[in-house]
Image (cartoon, rainbow, N blue to C red; front, side, top):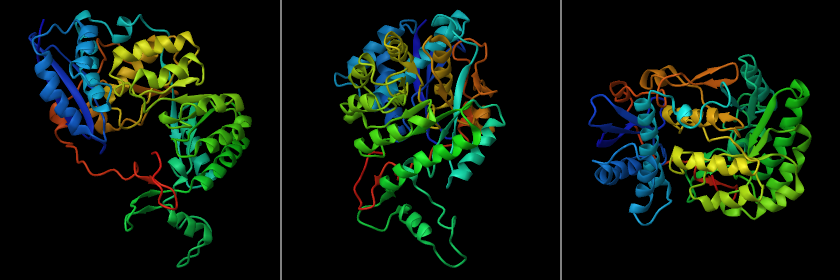
Length: 418
């Protein structure tokens, strides 16, 4: 068998730019698909696939996944950037999908078989105030969800609805005035998504106290700082959240602030999840081998696909770190399927982030995993068990605009990590 064509497919069924890679072969009807989604720079990834990886790999044997991954990584000489890693991931996942189809086995069987029947998931509950967050928690609990991530006003506590609260018709309360300052400001020399880190940091322990007092401790609760605090304030928040027994606290620091994990570990027993911005093994190696985190949160296309992710999972297992692969809306359904096959096969699986798959998603991506009773379930089909309907995908072209939420700013205009 030989590779005859590698091409990107761009689509946005739910308004988020997704990048899929299709690896075609000289065997009629036999191909694989993978996720290469870097939604902030989708066309760059697509060009890397079409202009560089396609001519590099055409004519090669698709069975040699490890060698192909190493060739893609090293052929450009400079390596480990997110654009190239995502392009490589699209090819890598597609080759695993293809190998499963040839073997007539699901990818999880190629990786050693199942360690569990399905993967426990967590969902996101947001709101403008604790009562609204609690209402959204109950909506998930009514569907059998076992774990919920609590946010209030999104990352950094940004609240967009300024009419909520004590404001009277035609007037603004002090609370509403503050919330107005947290909205996007585009009419200054420093446009961006403004938020107040101090207000945010003080609000989260109260949120968890409110929710725990209402629902008790039989539900797993999580929170994502998303790097929105100065490191010492993240340490303080982790300590304040200890009584509420979080399943994990996510991304307390930026990847550049790794030395702070030593202080955090010494100061708090709150479990820590980290990694969605990682690209290079040196970004996670120290955290894993020194047991400074509890959950590995990498975006598997960001590190280059299933091939490096399974190696990372094995490293984590050796040091008691569990997996919790990144699974937001800017992971395509193909990427969610790849996450799931790793979840099912890796002994040290912890939990899986997942989105609500719309009818459009199931239309464009037949075979998308099913959410049921707090778990994500795979089908028994060969490969990744998912396909793409290119005719349906073409109905949802991507529309790329500059992204404002990654221009996060403090009240004085200081740009902060997103």
